[in-house]
Length: 368
Image (tube, rainbow, N blue to C red; front, side):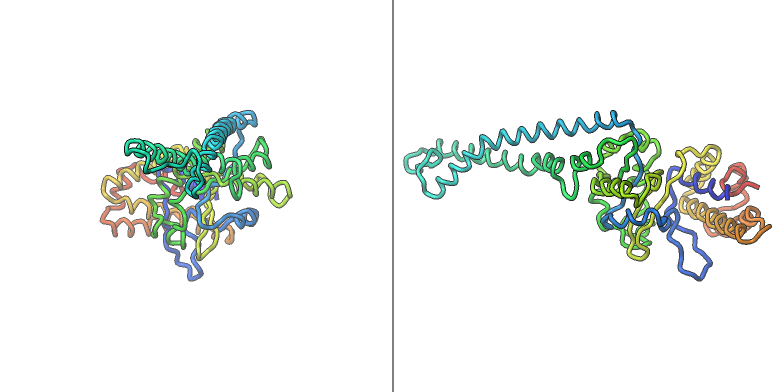
């Protein structure tokens, strides 16, 4: 069991995580593709509250409340200033627009222009002035007003509602969701794992960096907004509400969890483990990956990793059900046998390759 866990941690700690599973010989319905699994029963009530059209990153923020207050003060002050600016502009602009409206309806006021008695330079100046005013106010409403509106009155929840209902806690649930790039791209199990519209590249460039252990530990939740991920405030409010009601515990949100919804299997989660530091095992994985990439056989690397994981998990299950069964030895023998066929299919000599990288002993799940 320890070897199986080591395999998972080391593989997840490598520079890229495999997104395709090794085929099973079982005739039963296949399991979700590694590293995604069905969620635990404790997490299901919360996942049921999430809109299924996005990818979600779930973890906890344990920064001190004083630090969170300082982080929150920055957008709070910014949006208060923007709101005051917009109110000042509205105070001066509304009377002008009201006068223009009355003039358009035929009333005689300061905004009405007598075209017959006004020369062309004056008409051009008035037209340019009003066009500039319309454009400026449109830009303020379209691009600036949305910030304080979303901040103070965002629906279904915004930052102010989040802080008003959750407060500043020592441990807080952070829920990030994909921006437009992730809307509706996860349709079925194939797409989640990289064979559809989402692709492995999106996971490598967006999901995995967004859940890097150093990134998660080094930033408070409010400081994690970027071009790929937005905070889902409704989810954070719901999570704390469930904890207060006793429906869930804060421990259920600890760690780093990637959640996606598929048409075939519903919600699937990837429970990321470790601190992205696999020691000798990680260095061996990186060496093997680099050698195969140099040979133009990167796909062989991922197939090999999945083969090791598949056989190790199967041996672990067999050892749990059959007392005295040598799970580790069986896994190694099966990997050696199937690995040779796999390498031969890609035109790589199995024995020569492993001799060139110093053997398999440091490879997770392959110790003699």
